[in-house]
Image 1 (cartoon, one colour):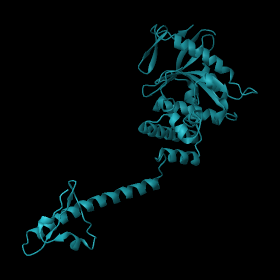
Image 2: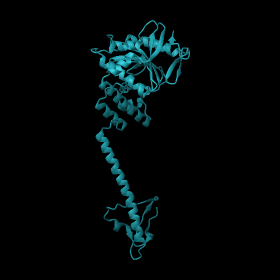
Image 3: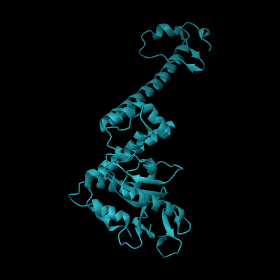
Image 4: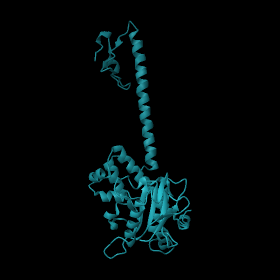
Length: 167
Length: 163
């Protein structure tokens, strides 16, 4: 996987939980923006499912992530709508056909990793973005304190004004 | 800087989606609060409901479309109301008010009875009231008890029953 940067997606002082996203260094659009571009337009068959995921992000920002994700000590990679660890993900049990993957750095900091349609494979395999998300998540967790640090509800680059770049 | 796509989606968001997610999270918050109070895990809840843990996780995902039947099952197992309608709230308020009135009635009955006892005791020509004590708790007769005077009034205080 190429080098990528972590950038703000929905970050506000009034948020209980802030959302970041990842963008490949050689691309202009973040993975979450791609997800939005793909589904957020009139006539899209998944527009309603997309709308609910978007609302979930908006609500979690206000209420905090603990409401949908109880603290746990295991791996921290999840999908929106949240259910369980991706390695155990049973994709056909949700009413929502879309998945937007994320990694929770802390309950107050979530990094969205991109996503897609859950049933886009004949045998119900997870979308391709699942594997990319796993890779993003591993690198992000490994880079903690090397590329970025946690400051309350935000993540801050080690190199002051430089973007958070992860190799 | 926030994503322009996110801001745009927020602007064109459908009210029903916002309400659906908000209500859903309200229900989840309520269920989790009850679980915490009961010191139950999701696993415990799953066992009591005869469901798998993954099914419960699905319910608590934030986007599950709860049916009334599911909510009824949850309320039955948790023995607590999850959703309270305005009418139920009104009924509960009336019930609480009735209970308060009953408690006040009992308190005033007690005071009135003691007054009655004092009056009877200090009247040498009249019989005294048998004021029963048991385990340090006074036995409060009901004012509506028609046999009260016959049952409780005796001729001398020696008949007081010790606990």
